[in-house]
Image (cartoon, rainbow, N blue to C red):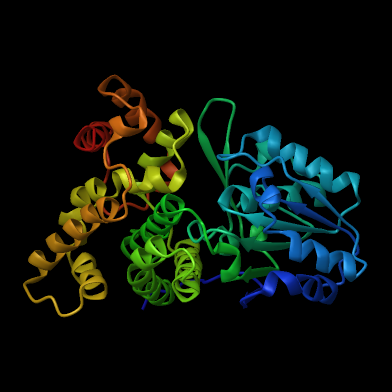
Length: 383
């Protein structure tokens, strides 16, 4: 066995209705003033009300920053950090999907020290300190609550990542009740996003290890077994909890065995055409898996045993069957399956392929080397 390191958040709490008791955890962390980071839609939905009522009842001063946008641009990060400074917060609580949690991570970092955002893009450049950090996901997808990664859309229309264990939260709280009633298309896209995390972690060229493999396999088991149920019945709390835990385990897996070409090719779709991240991943998933097939047959065959247990056949046949399973995911949950359906045409492929090549942090993890011509061919396959 090769040597490896494994990192995750300080504490993971899985508790239905746990948001209503969040104040107890905030008090236990000895936080004196908190900034809640979320988006306006989630704030209006009332999903945060029980948590905010609990904070008020416990006498914990807090303020709300609800300016998070999807694929958050740099200015949103700076505004959130300034809001934290403005109320002298010693704790940041991120409520929402990946964008809200990513903003919360960087707000806690920038408000907690004197680092500049432009100086920390990349891997391992964060020095710290940061404010105390609590993350509460309201979708089952990104796994951002347990990853050391924050993704920002820069002024050049590109996505850049800040990667550092300092961004891992002190507490991640999984409350399935917060995800009840999510629209089917959101459940589907975020769920496939989480499955991508598990698959890419399991097949990662770099840093793959026995613990990340265990997390990825169990994540895929939970997600594949509950995705259709959660899409068909948004009130199925057991399916919702399985999705939420599966997304979290996938996040822990890829936080240690990083994702690769699916994400590299999805990022330009999101950054340039404002397609939600999960849907961007879904659109290129099967085509990238087919490209990687010659280098990942063993792993794909093993993963087929999870999503289709009992399927017999040689390794190559099972690996092919796994790719076909992935190709059937989006149609099974009613998601778009072509780039044209999200407003992308053949004329856009050269730009997308060029931008994908800039995602070197991700491409280095892919089982097969991806040239710009390969990326263009993959985009053309799903046009």
